[in-house]
Length: 384
Image (tube, rainbow, N blue to C red; front, top):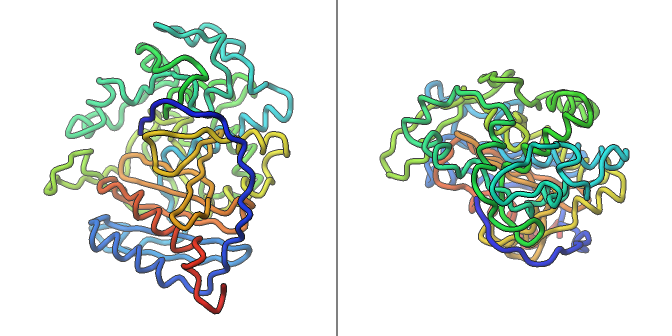
């Protein structure tokens, strides 16, 4: 996903709209069923949390070989939703005065940001988190792109990358704009943010996530794989891919096992729908960050040529639905898996959804699910 020039920074206040309480989820189930029947996705699951109430729905299968249905405890790769975890830890460190959001990257990673057109003294930690650094996305490097599609991906999916390698690949290309003058979705800045976390805490990124987020919140199905571990540990379904090939008859491959070190702080985490709802409920509800850092996280940047009707903060996005309601969260994609988690600004109600196939971009389906759950017209008349 790429974007171009940026508009102004907008400090966005919580929406005044209180989403209606749902008493059934028939339309949600219909959307899931259509996504599988019409879109060809092997399976979808969603969990909706409203206060203490939880609803789980599924369509299709977790495993095309056995026909097993997807289950609430199933783990899956969450791709760029990892960025929200990374940004949260950075903001916690800022709250503890261990670092400053306006610190130059050079202060924490001296000599690391070097390349044609880059000046690490002018790129701040804040620039890294809201995609205004201008640093080239290593995923768009021609060699990386060639390894990520078609049969070359099957040959390279177990290759390992060190974070420093990913940064070097990104910085081998000129910046897309000067720091703070544009907006462009990029994974490279989040790799740098992960390195800063390790430098400041003296811990591995996996340990930092566990210490600060997953253990305190009881997220028992969430972890960042260590090293080159290709497995999804614990209960999980299969992840399916057409290897980014667009032909209608492109073969489907099982890519459940892969080395996600190329995503790391930008896209490497494994989680569950329940854990994602718990995490975003706590984050949106102000239980993970003090007020000042919560304000920093939700100071939004207008996006362009990205997901329609979105703005972006520090590791979080907002999406304005067709009915005028705004929801908050993040989405992510990685080979064989697409994930979305969004909710009300106060975090009382959240919806997490995952598709275990990476073709037929499901963002339209995910948006339809959000509208079915959060728009006033979606509620039965008795509950409005």
